[in-house]
Amino acid sequence: MQSKQQKTTLEILKETMKETDNCQVYDPTYLAKVQESLNQWKKERVKPKDLENWSNIPLTVLGSEIPREMIYTPLNIANTDYGDQLGNPGEAPFTRGIHSNMYRGRTFTQRQLVGFGGPEDTNARIRYLLNHGATGINLLFDMPTIQMYDCDDPMAQGSVGSCGVSVNHVQDWELLYEGIDIAKETSSIVTHYPSNTACLFPMYLVMAEIRGVPWDQLKGSSQNDLTLEELVRNSSEYIPPKDCFRIECDNIEFIRKNVPKWNFITLNGYNFREFGTSGVTEMAVAVTHGMAILDEMIRRGYEVDWVAERLAFFWSGGMDIFEEVSRLRAMRRLWYRILKYKYNAKNDRSTWMRCHLQTSGISLVREEPYNNAIRSAFEALAAVLGGVQSLHVDSYDEAISVPSEEASLLSLRTQQIIEHETGVTAVVDPLGGSYYVEALTNQMEEKILAEITEIENQGGYVEAIANGYLSRKIYNYMYKEQMRIEKGEIKIVGHNYQKSGEGEDFEAFHYPEECEARQLQRLEDHRKNRNSDEVEKALNELRIACREGKNVMEYTVNCARAGCTVGEQWKIFKEVFGLWKRPSVF
Image 1 (cartoon, helix red, strand yellow):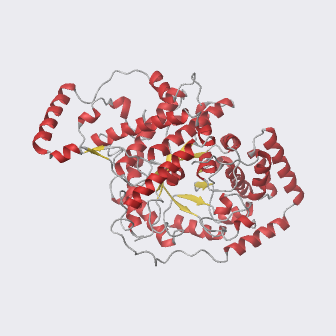
Image 2 (cartoon, rainbow, N blue to C red; image 1 turned 135 degrees about the horizontal axis):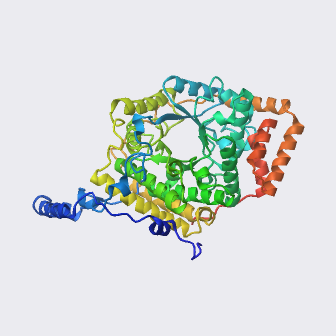
Image 3 (cartoon, rainbow, N blue to C red; image 1 turned 180 degrees about the vertical axis):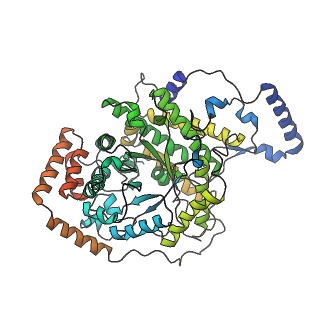
């Protein structure tokens, strides 16, 4: 548990945020008139039943259960100080956006998630999307690769190339990016876990070496997220959280030094929320994770600005439009305040909450799958209204299979229509100043801070994973959410409301049937043609580095150069760190 001497983030912010002359937007005399008018309106116009139910909670998939009043007025934001709580876009506290001109200057990156089959299959889909206007690559791996098993491991049988692309070694990366200019295109590499990032990202770097592309030209991001490896992941094998966190920070240290334009982590709220939490918990966990990283990197001797300016976030986008807009705005303001007043960051860029958002996969259903296109479009609109830097729109068939080419193109077109045809990118923070949105933004910030305090009282982010606190929080929320869906309290059209059987005969995408055989043969050839002595030497040096506390990525890069596979390096981690059993949640 947290020591009595250690202050919570909330306490630090209250003590250190500079006092300002409170210049309220609304004059108290004016507010008194508004109150008088509102009281009269309620008396004369509002039905008694509506007065009794003045506040209700919109029940939506993965919602935050924040009560909403029937109407909002200046009274709901009576104490708002424009400069302190909103400010102008591109200026502290960045509630209204991290850039002064936002999408007028540079639109959101349209980065569609892609990955299936072997490297050549995914390469064709990436090139297809880029040729149709995608402005970034978002790469997903198959389950064996994510779980760090080579495709010839018995654990991989039957799953090779499903739900993502199969990658085992550097040569697979060369096929994956054939014909793609890695110095020009930005790549979001969904490596998920720290241990996976330590093995896979060096292969990308060695591919760049082979092509003669300097590492300082590479732009993109890797997930590298402890939350995914220890909390969200369903696996038979885990290394202990403290060792996983060490690898995560080793990755950060190496990438920050050697690949300066690369985002070394996307603090992942998305998969955590999709696994079963509210939008508030999603953000609170990501923030405490970010603070744990900053604390560790400062302990290692680095300046906070050097680390923070490359931190990025990855959010899930839900169906409650105004909640989604408000929590993005609240998170930008809160992250600024934490970096400014808790960590004394000096540079504005270090205080930016830069983020990628993916529309919710769990909000999509099998029944009447074309309805999912509408759901994803509304979630994407909320993300743009909230000011994200990068966006992925889920495809309507993702509740059934990997997206088809047609569905992927429609998702890309959804982003393009929002950008070019709706007019929402013409104005920065178009919902700013709304009584409702500003009041909800304030509530969101308060609730996120409250949950941050809960995690800190567990001893911090890593300890809250190790002791099972966050796992219990997930399962309690997930159970309640599922019960509400089954009872029809949360209404999902076509699924439990206006139910339909349509979709059972939907023609889904078919995986390349020969993919597994191709990958097995390629891996067999790779093992025959590499230098076994160099492989063994590189793996042994990695083993020693793990034991002696050296930066592991310095050695996994050499493993990639020697031709080591993902699975071979994972075995070293398990051997040195041992396996950890997740605490029971019941």
